Amino acid sequence: VNNAVNILVKNIFDLTLGAIGYWAIGYGLAFGKSSSGFMGMSDFFPDENLDYASFVFQLSFAATASTIDSGCVCERMSLFVYFGLSFFLTAVTYPIVAHWVWHENGFLFKLGYIDLAGSS
Image (cartoon, rainbow, N blue to C red):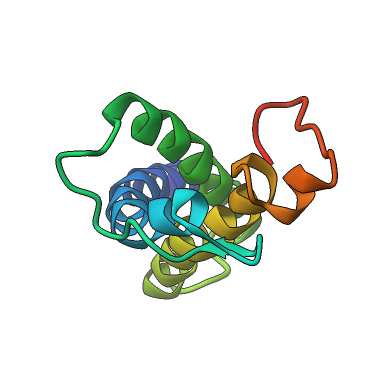
């Protein structure tokens, strides 16, 4: 029961902290104006011009990527360290990789890479 509660708490915070990080930093890194095809450099803290359906759709992939770590480090890592890892993965790591694949100027997109699974 203790492990299950630990994972449930982590998953709730993955989504909560992930949504804040993805809104503040991640969405801009993934879909902002491209910098040499590596990452977006605009649209941080998006406002009323945000396409909310697209944002929530993309957030679901980013948050899912961060929950994968949850089972791997179950009770092997301090909870606060895990929250930092989850925030960084959702706000920085995943959006940069998504930019490579999904942004029209992403370098993998330009090379013809096709993401068949729907998530990079």
